[in-house]
Image 1 (spheres, rainbow, N blue to C red):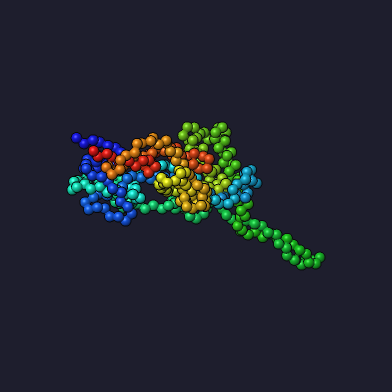
Image 2: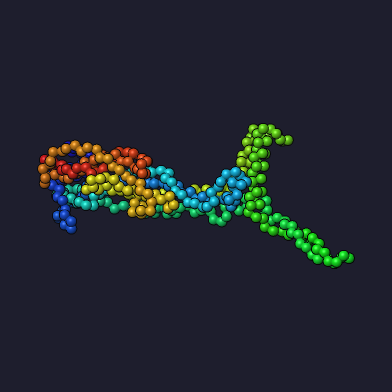
Length: 345
């Protein structure tokens, strides 16, 4: 009767290799005739990260906000990013650094299906994956077009003088001349501010019942909602508007067994460029800190009489943004554990 082992290598491997021993293949060395080559698992850590991009577009009347609305407004456009979510997912892969061979003596190798136990398999999981833009396209043109409270023209009166001959001689006579001119930005800002205060007065009148019309129930809610919408639209001419889009990227970290300090820069975040790889020094680092559990001492196994396998070492993974901890979880990491052998007899 077969025994079941869950030790980093398939139980089927043990069942079909009685009387055989796994051998380490050195770099460039070919496997013996009739042998099957396998690898032990390593843990890779994938970070699925979402960041929000905020595009702030300053209002055309921002410089007049203090004068007409009573508070300062941002006067320049700006792009900023902030983290929205981080998901940490550990995956198993075949260790590319060491290969092992075992002679099955003509028996079946069904364990090859158990790729999560360290065997190399090909994958086409990305075939046919839908392509997406890194950033959603933003609407072009002037976002504030058509939001003014009145037309763009006004009438300007200019006083001219002409010389007229009279009985007393020549005299200068004033003549008024009217012409259509474009309104100045400050004049349009003053009109917009006056409309905002008028909308607020109308809203107060409806709420307090100080109107000729009677509003109640859904009619009152609809009227107030429309007044608020119009006020927000005009306020954006002073205080600007913000457009948000989502940036999604994946980053991978493979912990190294030969490193004493198990701290890794998982990725970087720039306030103006967004998510960046760890190699791009223009962003601040988001660090993965692995705190390893104590390793229980295991008696040394006899060499040359078994199948190599790995026992993972559990670690507490913390994701840090400076002094702020963004995420904390426990994961097993195979390459930081122990490599042992199955006794075959």
